[in-house]
Image 1 (cartoon, rainbow, N blue to C red):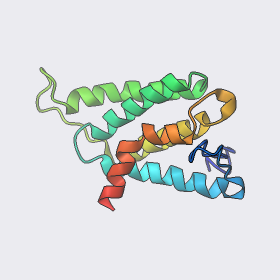
Image 2 (cartoon, rainbow, N blue to C red; image 1 turned 120 degrees about the vertical axis):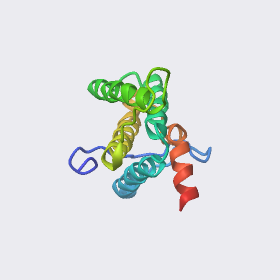
Image 3 (cartoon, rainbow, N blue to C red; image 1 turned 180 degrees about the horizontal axis):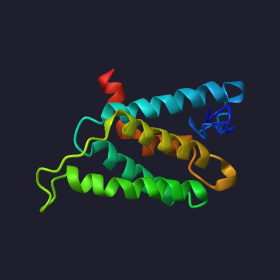
Image 4 (spheres, rainbow, N blue to C red; image 1 turned 60 degrees about the horizontal axis):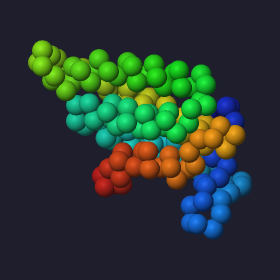
Length: 152
């Protein structure tokens, strides 16, 4: 629905090989679907340690918002999701005064984090917004993706 209904897709991978932009052409929609589903599953698989998926999301979110200031309403949604994760991290990281306080993110929560980050990376990829290209967005999500490759 994100790709076909919302017309959000990766049209170019940027200067991936150093020879100029790599245009996806008719493969833009299937590649975008593959990338979004891959990032959703990557965040689902990395959610094994208390607070790991939330911490990685906040780090990637900070980098994405710093590189893409023109996300508009999407940045408000992302900041709201990041603010909702702060109490979750306070409980799960067992900071002083918060012993024996655990909250479970679950599959739906970790998949939502992956979806929001994938959506923001694809929307921020548009050159009109001045956001990062696909390679930079890949670096922002490198740790969950590398973990998924290692698990597979």
